[in-house]
Image (cartoon, rainbow, N blue to C red):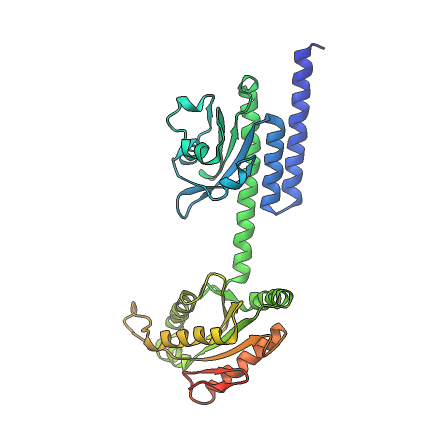
Length: 350
């Protein structure tokens, strides 16, 4: 057997081994980060770049960000974003075509600012799009691969691996969408009651471990039945959607809003004491009092709410108990004045 034939055979066996490892990763895990890490490590093992990265496309802002980066510049790249079309990777993401650039300094598409920022010296780039249903999901970028050994067969192999990576991303997003459907309320877009207790259990555990407080608000709309009776359930559903949006608009990114059922809502405020939680409750109550709902339906409804407030660990130390406390406070308002707030261990607010 000639030396060239032996080398080709060794390369072929290496390719088969990589395909096997990648296929195993795809079928044994739904963890996208783990799968992509395996794929990228195998690609690096085969092509021996100085450094490599995987850039994901953020479709909401038409940008790319470094989801995985290896090498001395990895930490610096975590905060870097490329506009769609910027640099070699941006061009590949925008056009959906692979690009091999043996000498980046002869290519006007090369983004010099990345090298300037990372103090890296890029000589060559091989960049491949990861595509699904004619959409570019991500880009794999290999820096300073030995170009003398990069042939058409290597490109075919790399594109095949990229197809696997695209499948992994597509599958992970499909699973994510399914999970969102199981924990999201169709009408309001808020989390549902099923997800409430799971989230609360996690927050109880976290708060107990780190010595945090958190506050729960239990919200019930006043006289909501009259809206359904007067205007019908379709209008009632549209009102609930607007109420859900109003509640969410007054919360921080770390807060949670749930539709508990019917016209009842729950708000979870992590790392928030009772006094601060009461401020949020008052803000919500004011927004209901001042707001006008269903303007697009020309109804201009005024809505009021009864709100109960309870906090961990002051009022309760379990998920079910804190909901019970907040619920009891809400009913204290409901059974008296409505359109007010009651706080565990303090009663009605004036």
